[in-house]
Image 1 (tube, one colour):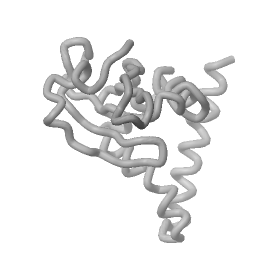
Image 2 (tube, helix red, strand yellow):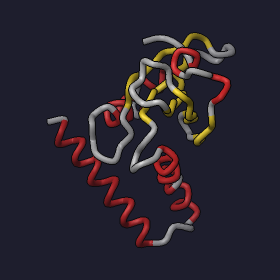
Image 3 (cartoon, one colour):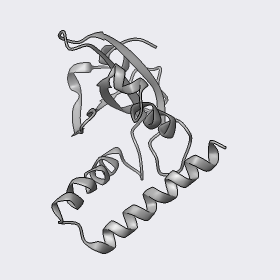
Length: 142
């Protein structure tokens, strides 16, 4: 489908920034009637990145009903954004491991690992969790 935040959020001006990543940012807003949950998380990324790996892989993972992963509703294309090219919005249910904020915090573990501020036990547990999800996803794909 096509459309920007105005077609996703009931009030596009009342969004909350949850996180900023290399490929885009994630915002929280109250969804329109189209989406099943009252609150949705919207990841905005360049449209070209959404169709190429790792963006396309991310959408496949999020829409594959894996446990403890955010549920993707759809990927919406937006028109030209201030002359910087087309954008895509990945619309997700507002939870992952119970809460989208927890998901965003877990994504920051990579930065902590690079800085060396992550203890070995926490790093091992998170790595094993990511590995298990990856294996489950590959198994489900056949």
